[in-house]
Length: 243
Image (cartoon, rainbow, N blue to C red; front, side, top):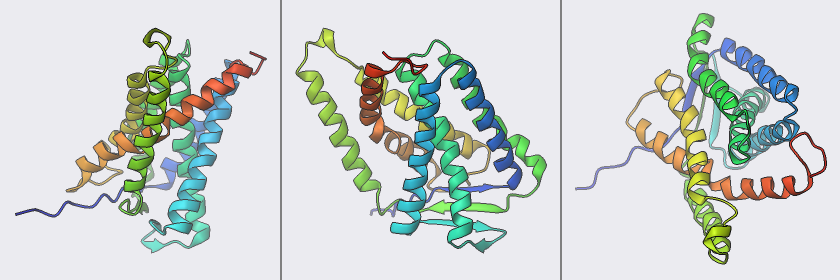
């Protein structure tokens, strides 16, 4: 007899202090990147934040109606939803894309950037507990689009592998396994931190949400991200000088 699979409904419960502290961290991270002249990383990170905002607010909220935001138990309209999603999208867009860019480019300081991001993801929720009860809740259903995400992932990697198979193995311009591992790890890092810190509630779908989202949601864009990186660095260095 088949048992019904629990649906994936990623949910986050947090408070205002978490948002304030996270905004400060983002400013510090971007400031450090600018200090070390990682201008390309900064631009790509900001692009990630804008892209996530368009997808989350424009796609998940306005088009598919799969995103909801509650503040103090009250369902928010477009205005309240936009500001919460803007912060959330900029937060994970900036950190995710910076994480990816420095690893794809094998930045000399990559271990420091990655440490800062992972440390913040794991520790921020504990610090935010000083701000009291979590009164902000966001959630989204994924059944409407996870299938299409899976199709996009398969096609994108198939296209990349097709081009790699046309070349001599010794002349491969990217390691597909390394690329896929980056995509998995960046999503797993913050999904895991949300779960163990209680921001994402533990339920019957928690493990499935963690694994499926980590395998799928960031990874589907990794071939395209590598193409952007390759095209960008044909013209510009990390400090935006001509390549």
